[in-house]
Image (tube, rainbow, N blue to C red; front, side, top):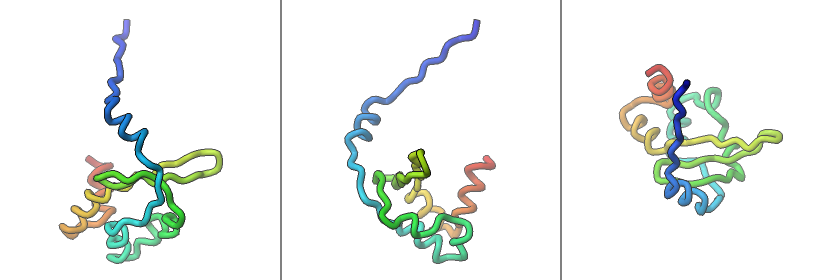
Length: 102
């Protein structure tokens, strides 16, 4: 008989997220820097995605909340990680390759 696995939920983190304010977001400096470094507009979401953007701010970045038809979509932006990559001369596509190919 297959062994059942249980999912452990960190209720403290969950509660901190629930009480977090849904707020207006602006485009982060790390994303602006990535766009300024090259022809990023064809590869990345347009800056207009942040026009009237709302979501949640965290120490590591933010979650951008948007509607796509009947769905609610969350886009995660890891600002600190992107800033660290940019400071070493790497770009967002380098980070994506490192995450998806390792």
